[in-house]
Image (tube, helix red, strand yellow):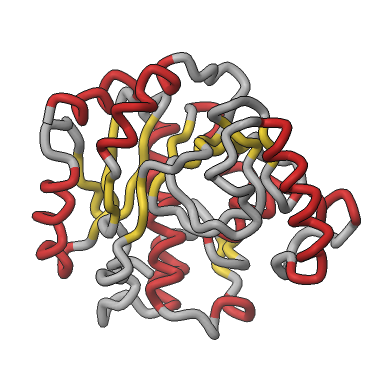
Length: 259
């Protein structure tokens, strides 16, 4: 799988978040990433008996505050997912890593499409980018089949007018018209979009300064990790870009081991 090795040309490190009790998923990841160099990162298994809310609050008190009034209706996995990503971001910052690809253990890698996009990704300018979505669900995403940037933005306006009332609910960001409009991704080139309100953290890349910014933005866990990222992006606190032809999809037959 020569083309998959190209991921290591684009990213200095590749981490796959997984947990011990779901090691059976790793052969599926290994198959998807055959030929790549990557490491598994042990995530937080909030479903363990010894990982009750009080234990987690004490264990991660130096990293983040868990607002149990807002998270008490979550599954334990949603808390574990947030803590897993935060723990990995801390590692990235502590070790001063840059251009890091973060994957979850339920990914499907479209390597044929990657072969078409590798040269585009090599030219991606990281100088002022925090986050690059390599996979996401299509909430508020412009039509990926439209390659012309101007036409994609016209579709964005149509989509905004048609689905204005269906934009995602906000917990942290005031619903202004500008913020609502920012929910919808905007074409910035033939290959990249300014990210909108995207769900999913199964595949994204982060710069060193992006990881620093994420840790500074989220001192308290209030809403799920993907929604937190999305609200930071649409409010302008985080510079998020998306590859408009996503390369990683979630395996719908295999729910994430940390959600």
